[in-house]
Length: 603
Image 1 (cartoon, rainbow, N blue to C red):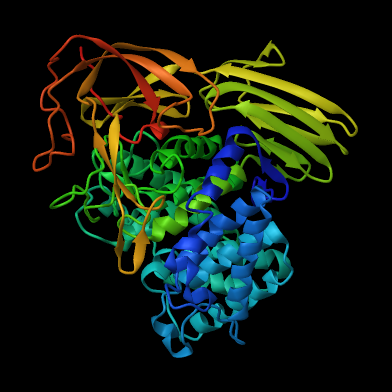
Image 2 (image 1 turned 45 degrees about the vertical axis):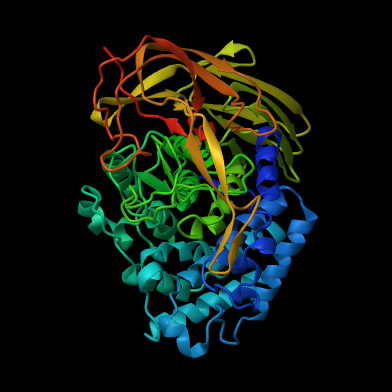
């Protein structure tokens, strides 16, 4: 059973910078894919002739909660139009995916798992009473096809078998029917066991495999949490064991694992696919809800405040496929790319660099993060992620006004129609915590709220700067959940063109980022002087970051990776200083589109 349960988009509403971030997303690519992108606009899911597999379900998985969180009636209507069309094509036996009956054996049923998950999201937002029956029929049909051997899991369905458990648990809670347990067992038996892949994670190869694919791995981390209850199995925290191995051999400074497109080791010039950011975030949300363990919430914050904004343009019209920790240019490689299994354009900001899965799938990251702000269990409510938002239910209203993670102060307004316990998670890195002006050393606060009363709760804490060690004698500057980088100034080169019938034109064209400032630095002396401001109209602005850190640096002969002139060397060619000490401003990783994040510290 879950330690915490999620509220819906009708109960949680974003405020402040978080609401503005969601508005930017709605004004950008996420809110317009059905108008401009053939694979959504003319998808086979709605009777068209374009892609009829993962892209529409991926897009709806984020577009739906985005629409309801913002209470955007036009977007809500457009979401319903897609759902209505998808439901209208459901076959009498329950099959819902857009393929001919005779092609079911060769149709990768990852799409079945994904569309049922997306339909649960739609129900939670809309309360459309048609949806449980639609999902029930899809799952019953899936069970019969798998049970009789008419179809089997293969490829993506085999690698992502646990994704179906979101819908299985949803229906089991409503019906309790035993065949759902049997379906769960079949999926696990036919699905991939990632524990067997661990040896291949420790020495990544330039080889594409399902069991080292970074998005599969990001999804997999929640597999035990979503499946153990219905399978009748004990929870063993297998995710933590696998997380530690992934971190040791493929970790990055912002909590990601490298994967361009498969696991790529510890080098700061290897990349991570954007889909992996979104899926790793979702796994951490599920893991925190299931276990209540703070480590998952803090890891979620690291991704949301660093990796996610770093790889999407300020206006959210373009994104990268791959981001790098040390990324000094985003220019198409003329020959062999630095990436292990991705193409020359994977790090450009564009409509669908490398492959369009991320174009559709990155949409879920911010909305589902917003839905993780508050959770509940019975008569207890917790503020799990302290971002500006409001919880409104029939029994209570809780508002948190804050500019966290940029400024570490929080004002809560709590009103209740019944008694309940209100908890607030305090990050492990918080120092000098005060609660209503009184000092506290608690790692979680608890308040008994009485019916009919209103409370104000004011919290503040400090966070110290730290220099974290990285492999190859490199280092990263961090302050709580924010990682900092040396920003590299750049000019943009806009690329408008058409390929395979897909048009790239402003504002959803491609962009190269060409560096115009120095990047070959090492830290010298102490990092000091953090300056905090309120976030502006673009919360993670690449031009006006809300937080900066002063640092002393000196230039070194860093050099380029052998065979490249747009990729810095994995490690500096020399650590001997070349110039005088300079004082520069570090930007949050999420604000620095070109950046140096892992640097040496001079003696």
